[in-house]
Amino acid sequence: MEEEGHVGRRPRYVVVRFGNVEYELDMVVCEHALFRQQMAGRLENMQALADEVNISRSTASRFFGGRPTSIRIIRLILARLQLSFDDVAKRIDHPNGSAPPDTP
Image 1 (cartoon, rainbow, N blue to C red):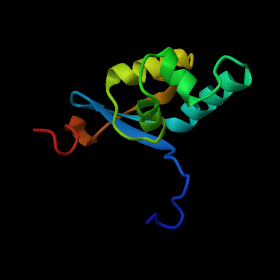
Image 2: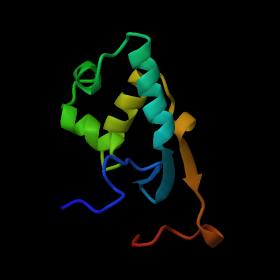
Image 3: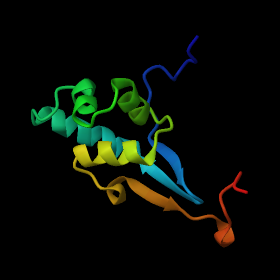
């Protein structure tokens, strides 16, 4: 059963961790880039994006849904959308330069 208010919603931001560094990815920028590619006729749908970067459609959907994916997948999708990591990511600075929570 789906929670009320969560039907069809995707996260605006997603936190990803690479090593001990966390970044906030702006998923709205990614969604808009996908839409621009579709409107320009360069991608028909999510399956076309997945095919072009040689991943499954479910992996592409996981990325856009804010679920965990590898840095390799993130790079492939961003490159195909003509975005750089810097276009969508903002480093999360922790107080006093401490490591993110749950980091040994």
